[in-house]
Image (cartoon, rainbow over all chains, first blue to last red):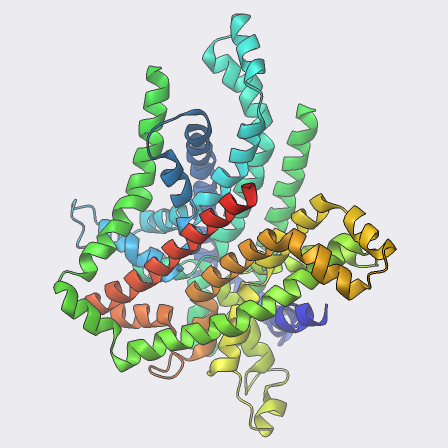
Length: 248
Length: 264
């Protein structure tokens, strides 16, 4: 507990305190500053887009990895965790190699908002896949077969049987992906070009404020980011529990 | 059957475009100017120092977080005390906090000018920010939860029967821990250590804020990559990235081996 306090809790408390250093008014001014607002807005919207895409592609990938069979499957399965193992700055550089100015396919997304989403998709890839996979493994094929033999179409089987079972896992994975996405920094530094009002996300904005010695402003935006992350984690946890209850 | 094939193509295509090709390209680019140039880029004194510093981060942060992780997991699973739920939630905090915010937080505690204890430390000649201790703290912060999260489920699963049996047979708490509990949770611990190491190696945001980025002094491997890129030394950036990517691949391989061992 002492270790935890020294390493994690006290520093976080310091951020909260610093954000209120000059009273609530200065906190409010710092947060409602146009550039800060635009950065926060971009962060939240991009993260939401990323969660939605992840929910679909993550479920799809998990499905293919569990139900399908093809040569090299276990290799593909182990590469899923690569974004967790790869340093974020390398992840950014990696994406820049294919989707940057020197793109071999002529697709230059660098310094656009699409690049923000792309980088976030890369770093959050494993969350939904790894949440859905174990549930899918446990899922009884017999139920699906029974439904099909009773005349249900594939779509109906998916919608009425598979999806409700997977939903809690998809939501839980999505929540983690969102929390990760709104705080992401390393992979975004290189590819987004950090243009204020266009591609500057909240964490990069905070970094800029620290560099220019405005710690109060940086702390204020940090607190907003923290609150968003905690609220989202709680909300997704609640949603996932609710989905679980519906199924039971 | 057709639908299944389509799904497979879509899933694998997505992975190839997002993961496969980009990672492969980094390897290609690193050797754009030949192997010799790449080798030279990662063996300059600056680069060597950066990798050395990263090693120090790992060597300090990983053992500390491992010891803490095991103790913390034991407390969460085996003990009943007030604030247990709070402890459980607080452990996950580093996952919800942006690395940049972590850096800022450390700055506000240990920074010389506006930190809580910065001045007190500075008077005693201890500099935390813009030097190695601060960077180690940042690394410890971001890699804190991994061991706890891997060990908690294993502890829950093994139950207390064996521990109770050992206690009945006259083993002390320490003996029980070393002879019964630790062997039972060893794969969980190992898994957690691998994840902690990967995170410690790759941390960028938090370290970036507290390091001051003094080349040859407080520059870790990831900061080195950024620095090279900003200076248009692409070979250097890509070559150092390849070293880090190889370490990441090593992590993946060890994770898979551990998973296989555990299954046995």
